Image 1 (tube, helix red, strand yellow):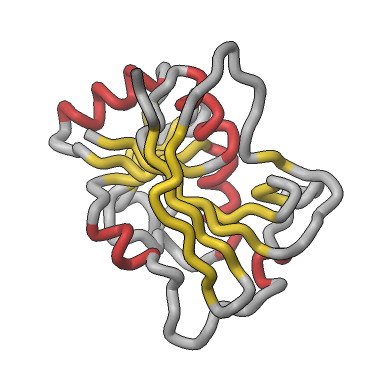
Image 2: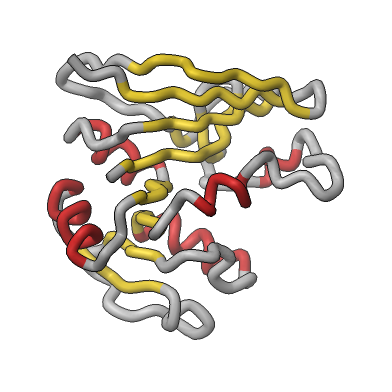
Length: 178
């Protein structure tokens, strides 16, 4: 089982602007027909795990569930999703270890972990095995940071770095244990 982060950040390590906005992600347009390897990544994934705030942001886009895999939405307050999301997601609460156990009990092995608070919670429990981070060349000067405080060091090994469209840097890390 692997828990994998696939996310974009600004140069200063933010995943959203201070107001929660994501429009800065379009600062460098993605080349026509290029999904930055996301479709290939999703072939490895069995389910998407995201927090309530990330899910509510997704709902705000009004595009429906745009993942080819089911979602597990972490929330203690939301219990149901509006159409067209309701057929694609389930709601759960608990620690990251409990969520991994739930996913495994449903036959999901490889999880895409998305959303700042969710990623940080999984990192605090040392439950992230890979990170694929694409850096967009913009400084936001503040906002929602990808990484938060940890009570210990977590080592990762860089296994690949790719320059995309001569503008973006995509780095792939594996958790280095032991």
